[in-house]
Amino acid sequence: MNEADSRRVASELEHLGYQPSDAPEESDLVILNTCVVKQQAEDRIYGRLGSLKTAKERRPDMTLALMGCFVGVKEAPRLQKTFPFVDVFMPPSDSGPLLDYLQQTKLYDGALEAEAQDRNLRDLVQDADLLLPIEQRKANAISAHVPIVLGCSHACSFCIIPYRRGRERSRERQDVLQEVRLLVDQGVKEITLLGQIVDRYGLELDAPTTLARLLRDVHEIEGLERIRFLTSHPNWMTDELLDAVAELPRAMPHLEVPIQAGNDEVLEGMRRGYTVDDFRRLTDRIRSRIPDAAINTDIIVGFPGETDAQFEDTCNVCQEIGFDKIHLSKYSERPKTVAARFHPDTVSEKDKTRRWHQLDGIQRELLAVKQQQTVGETVEVLIDRHAKGRPGGRTPHNKLVYIDAEPHESLLGQTRAVTIHHATPYSMIGSLAGAHA
Ligand code: SF4
Image 1 (cartoon, rainbow, N blue to C red):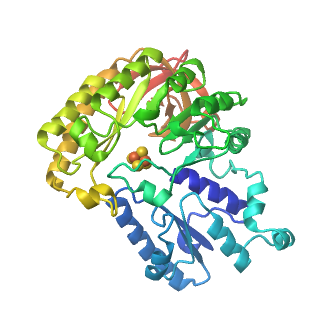
Image 2 (image 1 turned 60 degrees about the vertical axis):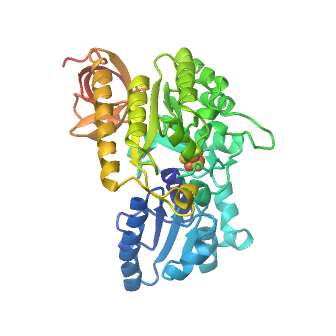
Image 3 (image 1 turned 30 degrees about the vertical axis):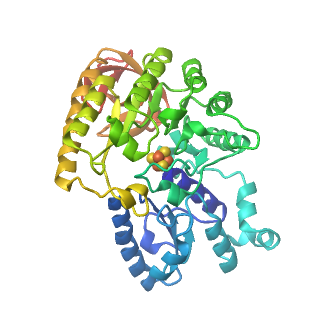
């Protein structure tokens, strides 16, 4: 979500005459986009702010903006006192305060001066067809993230996001379609629709709609090759949505649906709103409609009060369901959340780390078997990178594949059939089908 926010603000700034720079300390304008989902991420913000403070002291005319979950929807007044050297505070997904600041200080392209006298910069950038300059972000131009649901109203007990990104709001269908069309015009081949609970898209709009209907609309856009969406919530993944994924050839058979824990008491403490059996039924529903679906999940180890036995339940459920990828994290207490207020962080750091490694080991074993089964198969790879001296990309199931071929710019953005000849738990190597190995 932050990457998508950064891309949008970058496009708006380029429209106002700014150019990207690799040297923040030498730049006229620096925006630090922030994440506070874990304490570790928040700690890094303080470090970056320290070095930017030094840069600002050296070059007081630099504009410094702080954006994202650290600022949240109501933390700006408090942060202004703590970080007086920061010029602008921007809530997540909201460039408005920065555009107002640039308007007041007249820090925008002189060619826009006449226009900006009659209209504010917010309206100017909103009306502009904001093009993502492909020359500057070639690697990213193949795939792009498009936020469709902002904020979250669920309030899981461990999660700070509803406090920082605000209540759930869906973007208007036409806005989303317009953004996807622009990205496709610029060469983007794969779109990932984003939301904290993406499958709740459209439910609260004046003209209510659903993610399934949006998928069908996006699927009509000519030139778009792949559509993904994330993150789902087990309670909101409807049959209508699964049917759309099953029917639409360009909707990828890859779902991101966090279970978070494999024990009912822990799930209740987390206020997730489902049981392990509910989740089992969901995976059955998914696999009955999309038999080969890649099901990825998130798990938090060491939630307050989690016992070894409860953690073992989580390990067993992971083996039983056979997830394709587990995004693992250790519980990190976040201020103001229900968990921070009512559930003391009882699991030691040592136990959290041990559980993390145990589950990671299970995941490696599961993936080693799954990935090995693909050896000899031919898969479609959207080539989006050159790494380790080879071209590489993702399969429809979002698996990483490197190709035995010379890296060449012309391969980027192509979807090629690749025959897998080597597999490790986290990536595979193959040859272009029809090419001699
Ligand atoms: S669904 Fe739960 S974990 Fe996800 S963003 Fe909302 S509150 Fe946080």
